[in-house]
Amino acid sequence: MTRVAAIDCGTNSIRLLVADVDPATGGLKDLDRRMRIVRLGQGVDRTGRLAPEALERTFEACREYAGVIRDLGAERVRFVATSASRDAENRDDFVRGVVDILGVEPEVITGDQEAEFSFTGATKELTGQFERPYLVVDIGGGSTEFVVGDDHVRAARSVDVGCVRLTERHHFSDPPTDAQVAAAKADIEAALDQAAAAVPLQEAKTLVGLAGSVTTVAGIALDLPEYDSAAIHHSRVSLDEVRAIADRLLASTHDERAAIPVMHPGRVDVIAAGTLVLLGIMERTGAREVVVSEHDILDGIAYAAAEEA
Image (cartoon, rainbow, N blue to C red; front, side, top):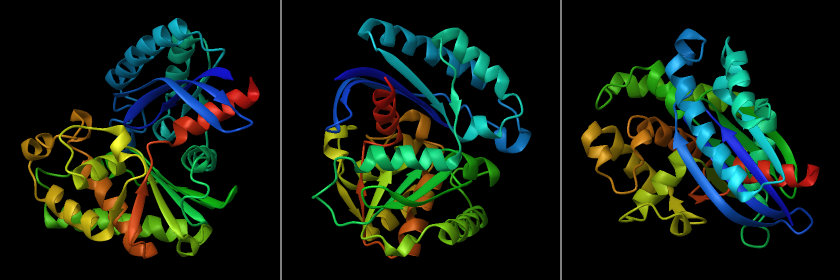
């Protein structure tokens, strides 16, 4: 077993996993798994730059994570940065800050690399439980990754729709207007056209959904009194349930969404857009349900770090 630390820094959140990993068997034992909402992608779609306050929130989380990594004695640290830092003109400021705090340079990966990590993390433990091929969708803050594969990736595509990007681009009010929702849906449909040009979306037998928008929808569908990762992991949410939850969230105010027991405070303002993305994917692919995974790109990064150690 190799002790590794994996960090996934996305548009909305930054997450840490410290785990003991056996790359040969696919065994992964969590030692610490945590998440902070830092909204690194705040305003990036509009300005093309990472905001100073967003950088500081991210660096504060990095300082916390550095202490955890040191205390647990990880042999190798791998830091992956995704959509927001790909898009930003001043990403060098971000890179320098991370190196100063953690001593490792963030890998600003491509959408295709992001998709590979997500697929590995989500499917390594699914063999024998669900029918293949899988379509893995990772709905992030700035982008959504689509990956089809069996044991390995067959096709992948990243498109620029995510819960933060759509919310900001269409200036969602509280609750959003019909016109704002229609504009967001048009963006989602255009992105699905792009994804379908590279990935055979409708060939998959099992739809696997990743990341906070999907897990939050699952928690709402399960009517959980609080967020429960074990209950959410590998739960199944039907198309009808997703459609009903989307309608509910789109009609809700900030306070009504914040009062939902499983809702993380950092997702209150962007969850409606994230649910719209999930609904659009299910309607386009004909999926009757989504299998929800708590294991995703973060686990894929950890497997990769262990193989390189």
